[in-house]
Picture 1 (tube, rainbow, N blue to C red):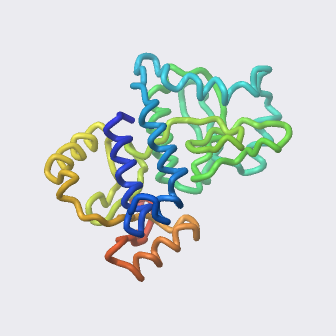
Picture 2 (picture 1 turned 120 degrees about the vertical axis):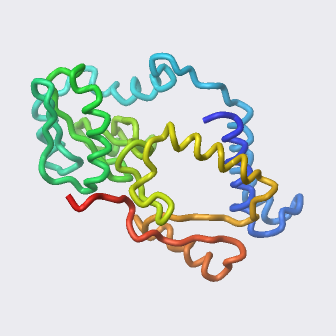
Length: 246
């Protein structure tokens, strides 16, 4: 993420997190000072990511793979499969196999989009890939078992993998993107054109959200929007991902 994007997030935070007038020294300022200070510190410390050989992400995968320096046994994979912590995949002689069940078929298609793109470069292997929004292997779990997840917090041992969202299997946004967000390279150009058409000074000073009800944590935002529509425009979408009939 570039400096401009970080600054944009900071501006959005200032709009969404300050329901009271932002008077210096006021209650709203004091309430959110810890968060705004963290944003400011992150922007000031930002350094462009080195793109060559995915070196920007080396610290992440090295840390995530550290618990498995001694290797991964058949029993560990069987344990992850039996616990239903994700979808079981196998690659045998450059062919991809998957268990029939998948919690989010559209998300599994996104995972397979990436795997099939490099299938001829991969040796025989098997793995468990979690397509839920939340990680599956808390650090208190013993022994540590290998599960790939696209999101996690420091309290989990899940192994991070690149999310598929902006290539295939991403969330559908009706009516603009009824079949998902599509290719990220094209989406970036679309975002750039929209940003040029609607500069920040022309935007409405209002929080905005569209998404599925994956948990009740989002309900307060929807209720706030209904009670104070001049402050927030938030609604649930009818589903979190598009998929074809077959």
